[in-house]
Image 1: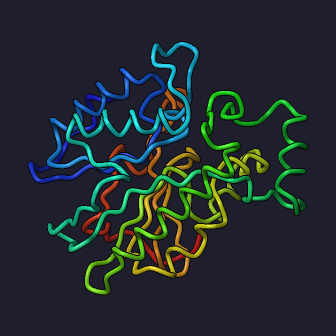
Image 2 (image 1 turned 180 degrees about the vertical axis):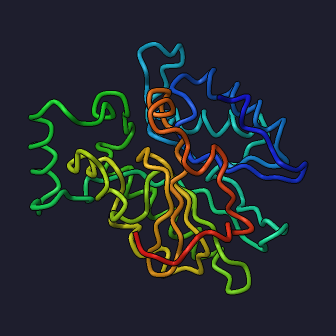
Length: 265
């Protein structure tokens, strides 16, 4: 699959919206390959990169693991949420690409729920929930919710500083910024592990042209308040064989695909 991810021109940039791999060596190798092919690569972490997988020789946890991932990216020349937001000045620009690292805090509640802690406990009593509960350690934060809150604060501050009426933002996060796309999940209660209501108005508060995310494995474009939200996940091999890639492996963000309409998803 990696061999099929190729630039169309020598000037193409690539946005990688997380879940590259689970072992640090595999993540580093993949990002190096992509950085050699594209003029610029911009990465934000998915939950899989943040796992402390028992099979990974690197057993760093939580913030320490994220910091090592940032180091790996910088060594490969890949931009991260900790770097200055680059400005695309090619076709469809200018656009300021803002990679974000915002987690989830169980506030994307399933229908009928009104308390995150109780909703999470109810789901954990079943056998269908995210393995993050065992592999995504928030250390040194006491809980994932606290890590998410810290990342919300940092990200909001940086977006406020970068907000410019002359240069629209492209917000890139692994998790969707609004809850509406999670309504398409087969198991709706999994929305608890899919984002935070703390980001729900960012596409309105800031001068945002587009939003890019992954995580849900439902590749499509939905519109919210006139802003397109691109779900760009590639998915697992079983999903490739069953569904193919309805939008192709690469989605063009700039210039915007002319086929995109303004309907709300």
